[in-house]
Image 1: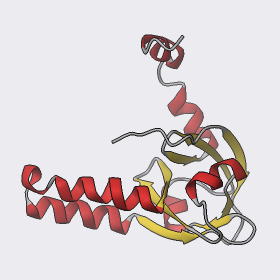
Image 2: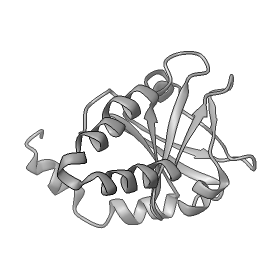
Image 3: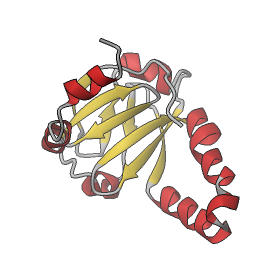
Amino acid sequence: MLKSSGLTGRSDNKVDSKGRLSIPAAMRKILAPEDHDEVVVLLVPAVHLLLFNREYWSDTIQQSIIDSAEKIGPQNVWRAINRLSENAHMSTVDAQGRITIPSRLLKSAGIDGNAVVIGAFDRVFVWHPERYDTWIKADDVDSTISETGIF
């Protein structure tokens, strides 16, 4: 379920050789409001990474899978839980506002140094710059936004 938590903006960042990514301060206040709080990093297979606030991950993402048990069946729920869990990583924000992302997740998302970080309502997207440009240009986004009636 998509919610608005106030995450907005774009930052062009670097991921260092140790897999550390700085989270922009404005985003960090929402993602990790306490000192040394945790952020969930989730791989959207072969596309990009998503960052979630720990509470949102538990209360919304995990709970929605559990709530789907009757609809999709117990074995499929466990498959979904396993897939999400194997592609997720809990990372503590360090004193410099960085998280560490495992190399396996970075490699799968194609991120090898430069990253586009975008705050988007209730989550933060982390993309390889060229993949993001290709994805965002795949449709007439301005027309789609116009159809929502907000301007």
